[in-house]
Length: 131
Image 1 (spheres, helix red, strand yellow):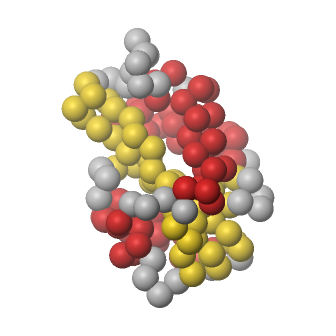
Image 2 (cartoon, one colour):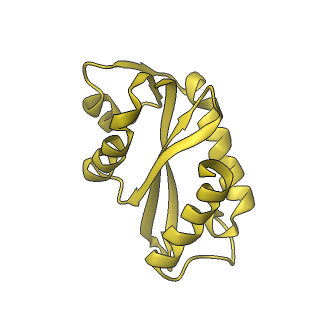
């Protein structure tokens, strides 16, 4: 069981900034760890894939920013919408940008393939959070 989970999405790109790649993930506030993540477009389908990975965890309180798709997907659940309560996951977004050059907005390092982009970020999350 997860008492408080923060959910957020992080922008990245592959090859050119017009080829956006989004990382959706959930962060356990108490354990200070990433619980699940998925890559894809910024759509309800990608959010649905993340929610299906999170269903076994029985999250009590969801904390998100004001993105409208979170509100529609979390209807009927205890859902707090405030930037104030997503500070930890936003800080984690910054840590990812600092540790992985390919996530920097203005960088010479960037991913050239979707497969490699997903594997590098997934491997980093695996080492830092899943082991």
